Each structure stands twice: as structure tokens, then as C-alpha cells.
Length: 230
Length: 230
DNA sequence: GCTTGATGTCATCATAAGAAGACATCGAAC
DNA sequence: GTTCGATGTCTTCTTATGATGACATCAAGC
Image (spheres, each protein chain N blue to C red):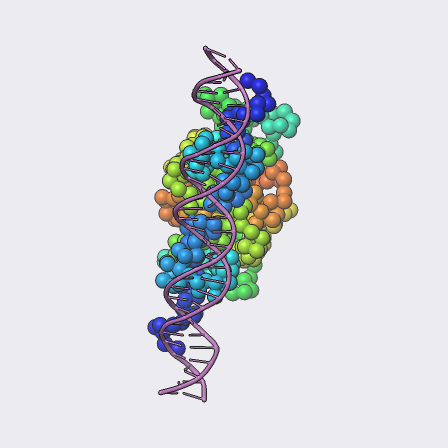
């Protein structure tokens, strides 16, 4: 089990997976050639057929390996007690739903999170999304939310990944249709992230995620029907 | 100028343009073959080279011809006086910014719209976006907001189209960075539209635009910093 | 009716890409 | 040290695709 073996199937597989994740996110599925993946991975592209069955199988593997947002690990900047600024839309006089101590639990790390407050859930979701964007970038799976051309298998794989994000949002949503509210929030959250990553909206792509936190959180809160002013 | 001439360059050009708009929106740029465009248009694909210079030129023409949202024409359903339901987030007691009669002017039809109220601008924008989605569908240009793989020329063409949408939003935005707020609103608006069109979020794709109006408008209002409760 | 440019049709080329298989080489087990 | 499966490298095949040019056909102007 030498770590620098000249031949190591797992190592090659991982290299291909990482290179494919980059390239699929950068150039899209149709625009990515498996030869390019092999080049970037420093691995012969023929191994893609061996380990993943082909280009489509590689894509599936990339989607299955992507968590969409950062796992429950706390944000890298500062103590996790106050990783986010107050939301303008809810910092006012009434402050409908109380935030506070529920933030830590809202990151949904343990499998049995104790029903965090809706606002804390939103804050945790934004934090985890920002962590993901700034560390490994916006993934191909996130882009799939906005692509018509993905085939059924890839769409299904994307849906399964999205469930992780949709589930807490459903719980946080207020209104007669929590599923719709949660999906709307996903469209807003990933829409901003993917658009920022794409670069067509220049100002959006230029600002730091910190400058995005307040307005994006406000939009999510509104999309979920959590606005306290109604 | 017979309308059914067997040979008509303008007619062929238009057929190619329409077919290309459909296919680029459906399959993406890389996934669209010019032969498919020719087939759908009922025109020989070699004419693409003649009229547009090639696939890239055809794509540019499609982007340039797309308005992203419906032109200022009033909505088809009912009188334009009340095309939209009240927004939950702002239907409350205080109602920060007054709506009312400014709605008609907010659709920004005449070149010198009389500085409509921010809320009316948002309402008009949502109406026009919905009209576009339900009539001709979500365009390839709108999708480009969320695609990294588009080349510089296409990105620039998309930006020029976006300016039409960004300009009134900048005027409606409240806060220190109107450009960022406007781009954020664009990401939210088109993010929801493109995601709904893509079909990965099943509930979002299933509901009618009318069911989307209230929460989407609320999210846009929040993204623009127009929430009255702060 | 003829001419001529515009328009349309067809064949072909060069390239890129995914897939598949033949062959080479490594290394663990014995 | 030998064997043999695992791993890696290389070549080749087939297909799809964008581009190009030759040729055919139409229609307007004289």
C-alpha cells in the first residue's frame, strides 16, 4: 500500500474524477472531451472506459461525488458563533423569528438536527454554500439545475444530490406549499452562485461572497415566505 | 414580393434563426448540430454558412434577436390595470412604497418612462418575464447567464441584451450598490425561469407562473433591498 | 427569350471524438 | 524467480460534425 505506487487504480480513478469535475463544470458535458480529462488528470483517457464505462459513466460518477454545498464543517473564517452578518430584512424592530443560539444546530451536521429555527436554517445553508463556492467552486451538479440538455440519468442523479439541500429548506418554509418554496429557494441560491461563477454578470462575479450574504439571505427568506413583515 | 416564393432568402434566414433559437435553448450550443437546425427549419444546412458565416455566427444572431423578456406589450390575460396579485411581503399595514397608478408606466414601453416606483418596476419586470416564458419559452440568451462555457463574443452579446433588463432594475434598487442589486435580481429572476424550464426541480417546473408570482416578486424585492420592514 | 446574379442542393473533406481492442508492463502471491 | 492478474499505453475504427465548393435552378431585368 505504497502511497506513491507507479500503478494505483484508486489513484488514477480519483485523478480522473477530479479532472472531470473541473472540466465538466468549466466546459459543460458536451464541451468536454474525455481526452482533455485524461490530459488534465495525467492519465490515459482509455482508463475512463475501464473505470467508468465511458464518458456518461464518468459524468454520473462526478455528479454522485458532489455534495452541492459544503458538508457540515464549520466555516473557516473566525468562530462559528457569528459567521454571518444580520439580515437587513429582519434586523428591524419586530424581528419575527428569533435567531440566536439555534444557528449552530442549523448547520445540520448530526443526522438528527433538533429542528433549528427557519432563519437559522437559511443562514446555515448560505454559509455552507459559500464555503463550497470559495473552496472547490460551483459544481457541475449545481449547474444542472439550470440546464435543459442533461439526460434523464444525470437529472435523476442531480435530484438525489439536491434532496440534501431541499429537505431542510422544506422544513424551514412557511406557507401552503413547502416543496415549491424549497425549490424556489434552491433556484435562488444556486442561481446566484452559478451566475456568479459564469461571469456574465460582471459586478456579481466581482464581489466577495461576504458582500452577497445579506441580500442573498434576504431573497431566500422572502422566497421561503419567512418575511416577518406581512 | 410573393409571400410563397419558392426561393426567398429572408424566409430561409428567418426559418434558420427560429429553429436555431429553439435548438440552442433546448440542447445548448455544443449539443446542437447545424444539420439539426437545417432539418428543423426545412432548409439546407449549407445555407447557415452562407447567411451567418457558420455556427458561431448563427448563435450570435440568435442572441442578438432575443429580447430576454417580453417587449412592453401588455399581458394577454385581462386588462393591464391589475395583471398581478399583491405581494405578500408588502401587502401589510405600512406598505412602504406606494404602488397603484405607476404600474402602467413601469412596463417601460415608451423610451422616456416617468420614473416608475421601484415596486411597480419589479411588478412590470415579472409580468414581462412571465409573458416571455409562456409565449416563446426561456431563451438561450437567458441560459447564458448561468453558463461558464460561452465564449467571449457570446457573453458580450448576452450582456448587451441584459442591459435592457438591468437598467430599470438599477433605478429601482435601493442601497449603496445598485448595479450589484440589479444583477442579483437578474440572477434571481432568470434563475427561477431557467430552472423552471430545465425541469430538474420538479415542483417548480410543474406550477403555473401565477403560483410563482407572489414568492418570486417577494424574493426580487428583497434582493433589490426594497423590503419595507427594516 | 436570354442573361445573370441570387438562391438552393448536393457531394466531399478534414477533423474531433468516443469507443474498443491489442499489447506492454508492473507487482503481489506463491 | 516465476506466474498471472491488474494496470497502463498505444493504435485504430467508426461516427458525427463543421466547413467548403461545385453544380443546379430559379427569377428578375433587359
